[in-house]
Length: 281
Image (cartoon, rainbow, N blue to C red; front, side, top):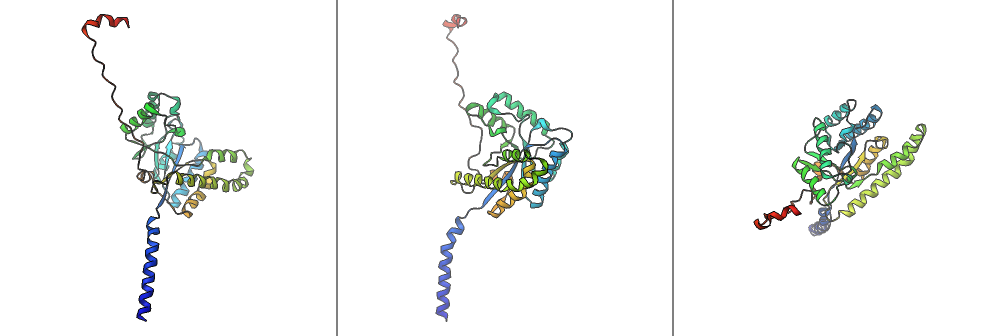
C-alpha cells in the first residue's frame, strides 16, 4: 500500500510540474473604460450619462471621462460634479474639440490652456489629456504639444480599442422612437461582436507586451446607456478585470513623452569687415 501511495504522489507531482508553466505564463487581462466628449447638454442627454454612471457604480467599474470645455454650461456642471463625486476621473479634451492636424501648435496650446482654466473645478488628479479625433500630428508640432502637456503635468490618454459606437448609435437614432427598443435588441449583438473583434485585434497588435492593459473608448449616448451592462459582462466573461486609467498606463512600456530636440546651431557674429554689406540682404 505504501508503494502504491508513493507512486500516486509521484504521478501527481509530475502532473503539477507539467501544468505549472502554463499557469505561470497566463497573463492577467485588464481593461480601462474611457468616455469622450463629456458633458451632454440638456436633461435628455444627461439621462444617458446618468444611466452609465449607475451601471458602473453597481458593477464597481472605474472610468475616466474627457470634457469638451466649450460644452460646459450652467445646466450640466452638476452632472460633471456628480460624475467626479462618484469616484470617476475627468480629463481635458480641449476647449472646442480641436483637431491638431488643422491648427498650429500655438493655437492648439491655447485650446488646452483655455480648457484647463475653465475645467479646473472638476479635473481630477493625475491630470489626463485626450486628443480629439486621436489626432497627434507629427514631427515638431507633435513634440511641441507633448512638451507643453508634460510641462502642465498632463498624462496623455491613448486608446487601444475604438468601439466606433457613433456609427451604431446613429443607426439606432435613425429608427422611429417607438421602434427603437426592438431595433436595439437586433443591433446589440452586432455591436458587441464588433467590440470583441476590436479587442482581439488590439491583443494581437500588442502581443509583444502581454501585460499591457487595453483602453476602451466609448461615448455617453443612447446606445451605451442600455448596452454598457452587456459590454462589462462581455469582458468579465472573457476574464478581464476593469482597472483605472492610471493603473492601465502603468502597464505601458513606452509612454508618449516630450523629446529633447537638438538646439539650433548658433550663428557667429558677422566679421567686422563685412558689417557694411548686411543691409543689402
